[in-house]
Amino acid sequence: MVNSIIFFEERCIKIFEKLEDDFLKNPKNFAEYVYGVTNVLCKLGTEMIRESLEAMDQMLCESSFRRKSWSIEAHHWKTLTTSLGDVTFKKTLFLNKQTKEYSYLLDRILGLEPNQRLIEDASARMLEEAVQTSYERGGQQMSMTTQVSRQTVKNKIHALQFPPENTIPEQKKVVDYLYMDADEDHVALQFREKKGDLTKAENGVKNNGLITKMVCVYEGKEEETFHGKRRALTNCHYFCGVNGKEANLKFWDDIYQCLERNYDLDQVKKIYLNADGGSWIKTGTKRLKGVTYVLDGFHLEKCLIKLAPHLNRKERIPVLEEFRKTIRNQTKNDFRELVEKQKKGMAKWRKRAKVEEAAEYILSNWTGAKLRLKHKNGVLGSSAESHVSHILSARMSSRPMGWSRQGAAKMAELRAYYYNGWRTGKISGTYKSQHVAAE
Image 1 (cartoon, rainbow, N blue to C red):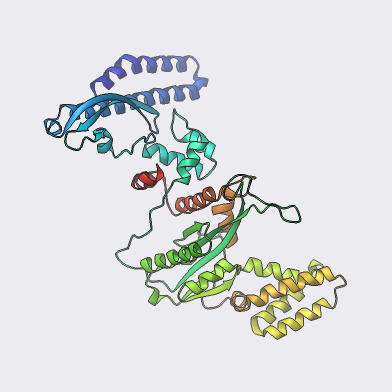
Image 2: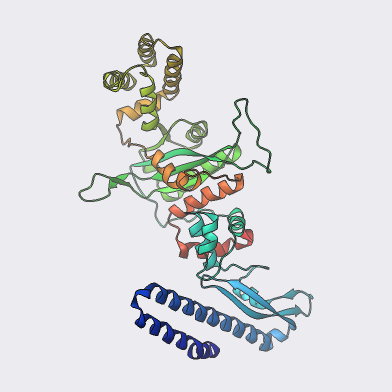
């Protein structure tokens, strides 16, 4: 620490004095004054870190306990990137007298992996920016004075291994109802396995679509403000991923295990799954014990509108209400008869085909549609569309961009991890625990 104090007295104070003098002469350059002070403080910080690391290495060199098993072989320079900037220091390579193993003992003490350059604090800043904006911005914002390439950020994200959620609370929560909103986002792939492997359909469209899945679990809704009408979800938790076949089953199993760990499911009256009836979602209804499927209101209303494409908005209102009453209180045959009645007033076969398609969708989700329209026994409106827009689309598909399958899968998981309460401090510790896989 002595050298850092000398560095501060000999260099930093003079720079501070000059910066202050320039600022007093021209107060409008306030931002430049702040930037100048920040840069000097970063240099001071990296100098303090360098001196501390070299002091630790020197202690290892002088240790009598170390001499029993390890001999000094060489001294090498090492650069670590921190959130303050690059820290370049000298460290010692040791040789084990019995096993003939070479090792940097300082790296062992610090928990650094071989060839590791990024420290957890810089990695956390990098990931926090990349999960919100882009790989390039993540590389720019990871340190106050240093940058890395977007390829480096991409490699780090592709290599991430997220820790399993196995924390068991002291006491399980008791609630009357639990809710799950499930939906998907469609992202574009640059390739599937390797570049150039995308094929085109007969209509010329590439098969570059990929489904990213999202499930939001929450306990209910409450008023967001005292006077406002908006309602906020209570204790929501997100699950995201790109899963197919067996992985999709594990995805739902992980969700159910999370519910079992945190809630007394024997005391829950109903678990409602709000969704649009996709095949991967219906798999979840069979995989999860005691779950009741409810058709998402957005998709239901969209199909109802398609049942009367020949009517204007004013004429459509009573017709749609009749459809709702039929779904709510009557049978599938009654619904089919009403659909046939509407089709008679349509001249074009294309419109009839759309009506048949919408009717078939409702019939295939009949029980879920009934529950949605009856809105009883704790059924709440679905927020799946807004969840997908906020959690997935905002980063992955709202702007033109192409993903690899691995990149899309990792980013979807990282988005869920972020919105489940991760912040820089939390991921700093988590990142350390998974660093072997990430390097």
